[in-house]
Length: 119
Image (cartoon, rainbow, N blue to C red; front, side):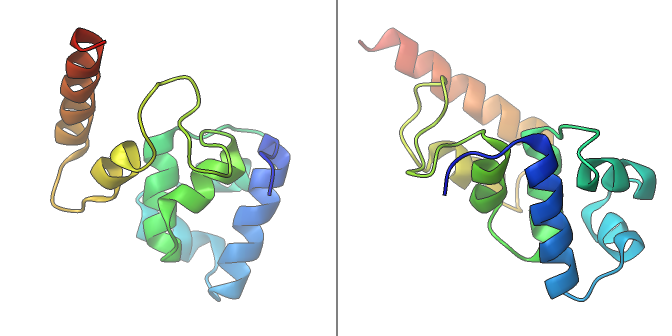
């Protein structure tokens, strides 16, 4: 599966939501995003951040990595686009429900700084 455009991400999200038998409003509430914003994502009018995709994935009960691939954040082999992180590091940190968003971002920044120090 290749990286898809924003519109294709929206179609994918809509199909996943329908398969989960969730209304747009139910998914928006479960993901903690506004109903209009989720609608705009599904219609291809907005490109969500990795954090928003993670929240939507939790609401749909699918892996965030699946949505990252659909959005073009990760390629289909799980290699990070441009960030230079090995596969799995970013996903593991972002998928940990025991961390706040700020803690996740702090961990990723620390990890990146260590990687830059070591050639």
